Amino acid sequence: MAHGNPATAVAEEREKSRKLGSLAALWPFMLPYKALMLAATLALIATAGVSLTLPLAVRRVVDNFNVEDGALLDLYFLAALGIAALLAIGTALRYALVTRLGERVVADIRKAVFDRVIGLSPVFYEKVMTGEVLSRITTDTTLIQSVIGSSVSIALRNILMMAGGLVLMLLTSAKLTGLVLLLVPVVIVPILTLGRKLRKLSRENQDWIAASSGNAAEALAAVQTVQAFTHEAISREAFGAVTEKSFDAARRRIWVRALMTAIVIFLVFTGIVGVLWMGAWDVRAGHMSTGALVQFVIYSVMVAGAVAALSEIFGELQRAAGATERLVELLEAQDTVRDPAQPRALAAPVRGEIALDHVGFAYPARPGVQALDDVDLSIRPGETVALVGPSGAGKTTIVQLIQRFYDPDTGRVTLDGVPLTEMTRDAFRQHIALVPQDPVIFAASARENIRFGRPGATDAEIEEAAKAAAAHDFITALPDGYDTYLGERGVMLSGGQKQRVAIARAILRDAPVLLLDEATSALDAESERAVQAAVDRLAEGRTTIIVAHRLATVKKADRIVVMDHGRIVAQGSHDALVAQGGLYARLARLQFTDGMAAE
Image 1 (cartoon, one colour):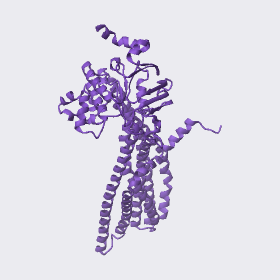
Image 2: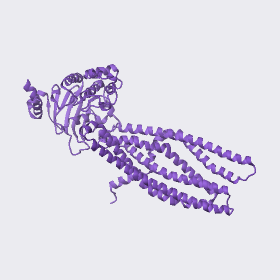
Image 3: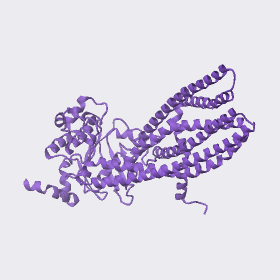
Image 4: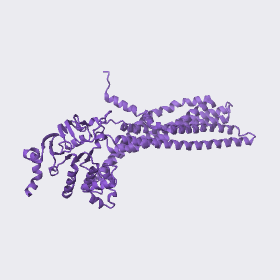
């Protein structure tokens, strides 16, 4: 067959992308700084040129040791000092310009990668751990900074030194230069052979570093759970195992690079000794002067040093190529949820009419399990609809589809009659307020956590929202009131307090659509009553969707939708559903038996 194996083709393509050509992806980030690159390049060329003139001055000094005019000899030494001064100034300037360029480009890359990953849908994070993404943004960009801010500059300088040195060697002695060039293939072969091995090990090393970061991030994010289940030893062992694998890959990479460096340096300097030996016989025979031989030797050392430096830099470039490849994977990651090229706009004001039109959906991680099966649901503007049912019935999935975290496999979701897929996500999400089941508290003050709902809100508006969510009293009791730092993931707050901060955030957003996913699940009875009253006030005039297991929180809903196994099995008021019997009546009996007996 003419067609190849797709898996093999992908593997070959990935192998190609691991070559130094991957570094070309950095070029768009460097283009805006053409002036800086030009200045750095001119400084680099100048320092290389000055370095190459130094052996000429040395030759003049050596060949004129016996000159009778001492002033001329002094002049040669002063010229050598002048060359050294120019070299020092040029090198310092090159370092400053190139390092600044590296820092600027890496800062831009970090921002570009973060800008990309912060907008990717949850589908992406089902496959890639957050810790690995952070590793790429930090560790991989540090490698690239080293390359742009140092290695590339040094590589270019050594290429110029090698090329210029070879030309001047040829002008000094064509015979000896020819002998030196015969050694080049002997040096290049180990560079190419070991370079391929080094590239593979560099990629493996970076992959294990990323895995190590992901492992640590996951354990630290759930540190209380880890400690509660006395899982510290197992977590330490797991992290240690991944870290040791990273070290093992690094150790092998270091040995391969060290071996390559040793072989190249030995071969190069062995060749220089041989050439020097032949040159010494040419001096004895009168075919060249002592100064010319010294000049040739210095150029040979320069060229050899340049080749040796390039062999080391080659390894750095290989690592940076792997890092670039990993960052490009993030920048070019295909998101299944994408904004349309020509989006439609919502008519103002937004009414909040939501419809799920024969929606079918299975999570990408579980394609064989239907989370929603032909769900047909219309919610009128200002209506409060409660979604109830056992765990896994599809309630939270509906909330996620309304926010377009995922797209349905069949059917469509609309807001005010416009399919979500025909609008930008920002355009309709700004009209939605969410209180999730697991409230997210940021490492900031209580004030800033509530202001997250509407960044432009005033302090007075924030406090009003907190009062409406029954959060004002406990916030003012904190050490610094609204300015109290709540710690990472809100470690200073109880579960119920976190939930009330999240509710205050949703109240502050003042959106026409309100999504409450188990919003009162973590509250005590007194707080739940206060928050329920706030939610009832907040729901007035808004389209409200409440996901709840506790039926007491949804009895006042305009309509209760009962779900089971991804399907709507019944809908109506609380009393009507109880009268119908079925799933809802069974759930109501389980939850209200004690309450009805007390009555």
